[in-house]
Image (cartoon, rainbow, N blue to C red; front, side, top):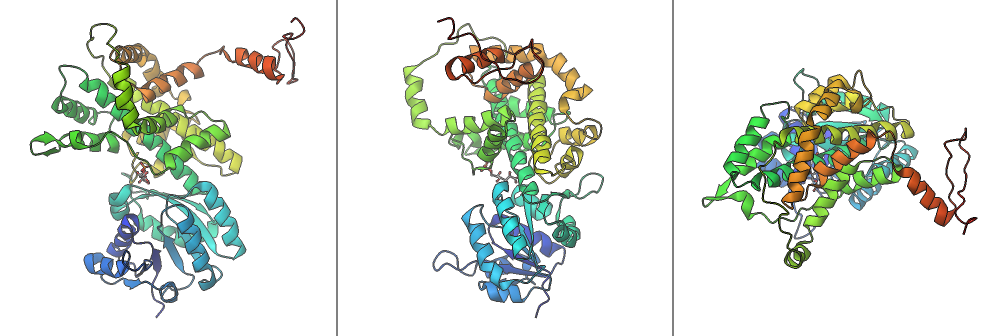
Length: 470
Ligand code: 6PG
């Protein structure tokens, strides 16, 4: 029988949730999970028995049998951890598939891996897509944001099904779209995650600043976050943060039971290093990534905290209002992410449309927010956040408050890597004359790297008189 419309590979949390989402919509499914004696046995079968929406799905541990139930051209969605597992399954699948079959990698793969795999798959005449999926398990189940790249013909064949799977925004539009060849979808997902890291870290910084005030408590902070969530600061991450603060165990705040060492699965590091290697400043997400890394050095932190006991330099001040600084840092974080997309997209020939990308992120994903709704509209007219009047007004209005927040944090010895790096970026990007001429002179002094002179036309390299006069 070859009556299965979709085949799903990998029954982890995301794979299972996407399968259930398809199942709820009545899509005939074949599910495959590998067999590993003692650790992964009858996983797909167990899913069909556990979830009513999967009871009609067929479950397999044999790839050949799984493939043979799929109608042609076959549509296969792979949901495996990024890395070698994806390469392995592609090489196992290749001999079993036919020309024109569509393979989608829906994991968090690195976009460069997706580029490589797209070249390989095109040689085998398969239609390969790399798809970023955001929204966690709940999004995958009820409607994720889907960022798709790869073979356009393949996309056209699955677009309708993916739109059924995806979240719908408040205008009823599916948060699913084709972004370009090769790794475009995974590239955009990677930047999504970079923005996500910084959004989370900004909230963590506001949390710590707020609790440093003697008048503050988890209850008052929760109330404040909840109030902010009724303003233009509204976001999914803010919403879940104030909910987290309300949880208790045995009368104690649950948050206090969690170790203060943040983990990561690598996508934030990819996003940060992509800025570093392509030459685009993404300081806010990079600061967030390094804040996680720093947090993980717990034993050193404990040791150094004893060695270096900083006293507050002056008596604690009243905590300044934090909201505008928070909002402005978020705008700058989004600016850096979208700017990376614009520039890198151009380099790859992806022609990424920022308004369309913001639209994909208005529902279903982790960084959905009212800001994203605004950006979706504003990017139709502007290519950069710095050109938007609403951002300019916020920046001009908030600068004094922001300075007060930084001063307060320094006084209270509270690290605020994202709040401060976004301010530094704002100051750097609005400076007519930077200090980089000194860097150029230094480079030339020790390495004869050359510099451009202001009193010369054109881009010729010159050297300074450094060694002539020694
Ligand atoms: C999403 C998330 C998700 C991400 C996890 C874990 O959009 O649903 O970005 O894809 O993998 O949030 O990321 P870290 O473990 O690196 O925090």
